[in-house]
Image 1 (cartoon, one colour):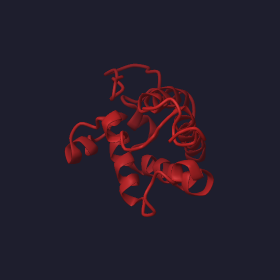
Image 2 (cartoon, helix red, strand yellow; image 1 turned 90 degrees about the horizontal axis):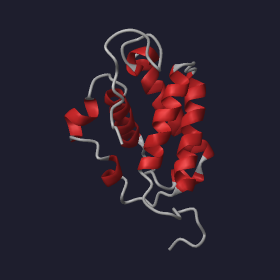
Image 3 (cartoon, rainbow, N blue to C red; image 1 turned 30 degrees about the vertical axis):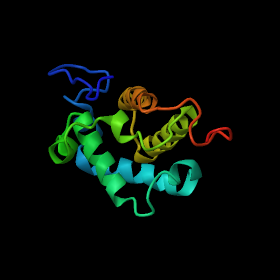
Image 4 (cartoon, rainbow, N blue to C red; image 1 turned 180 degrees about the vertical axis):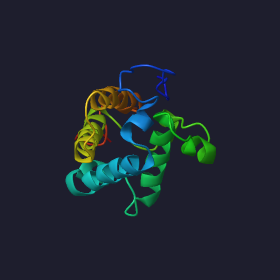
Length: 149
């Protein structure tokens, strides 16, 4: 699993014309908006994911913003503050199965739409982020399965 999509130095890219997905998105302000829309969706539309986050989700929002910034080719804020992301390790405390990964993607896809991310960046991010969501799965059943302990 590649943590950081490898931007090409020049020319057309799978995400568009900018050098990095971060630049194609427009930098920090639209990325912050994306993260806020994502967590707002979790709060309002996803009891499953809401139960996995603290009531005060400011730190979660900060972590995702900083991670996505570096992952998309912008400032490597998360790594500078916390070291290597180690996504699987950092998600071990949570029971994440297919239902949780799918729900996470549903909320992220809604946030991408709310932010107004257009093609080709939209398709590129959807594919790459879905790989990450699948990567952090750590159980067959997840917390939403009635047979899970």
